[in-house]
Image 1: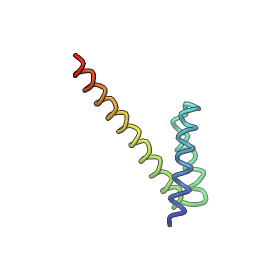
Image 2: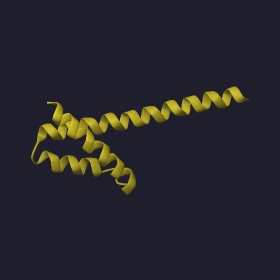
Image 3: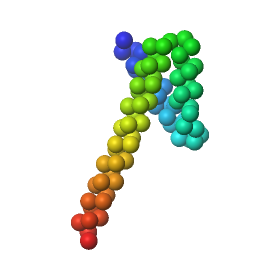
Image 4: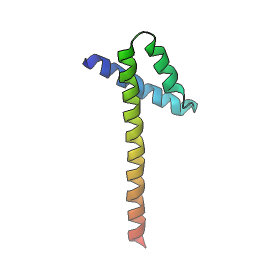
Length: 76
């Protein structure tokens, strides 16, 4: 169901933004627990969206660092 994934992803984006602003790494788990009380399907979609977005951020930072290192090596 596309609406479930769309809503879960939108919430995941907002929660990750709030997590960074608040410095609270447990926030996604706390929100997931609230969701689970009424919709396990939405909870799983939310958790998946959070994992995917965190993984993408980490991979992007890794790639940016690799490119920066390569550029610095060329300048030497």
